[in-house]
Length: 127
Image (cartoon, rainbow, N blue to C red; front, side, top):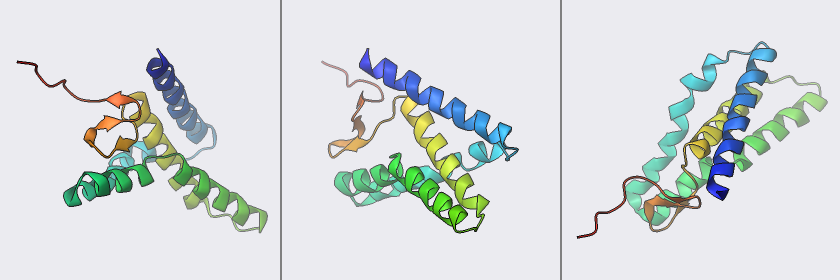
């Protein structure tokens, strides 16, 4: 039940970001075009489960988009309008939200299929 609520909440976040992009006259298609870029963080798994989890989690948390948005707002207060920074934050948050809505959570050290939302992928067959 809790996992279902988290998935619905994250789907709502993704929809809200998409609607905000449209309402603000920004290129909504950029959300889709940049979507897979954030998955490059999984390359850390080439060094092992622990390194993979660290690199993946660093990019698949809402902390990054929040800090990027805060930087945009700080620059805006200083009269510097750097819209591309806000677009990066939107694409980043959209990616995290869609991943979480699909059940892909932050990775644990045991491997890619172990997440904070539970196990993903096919279950191992019991013989």
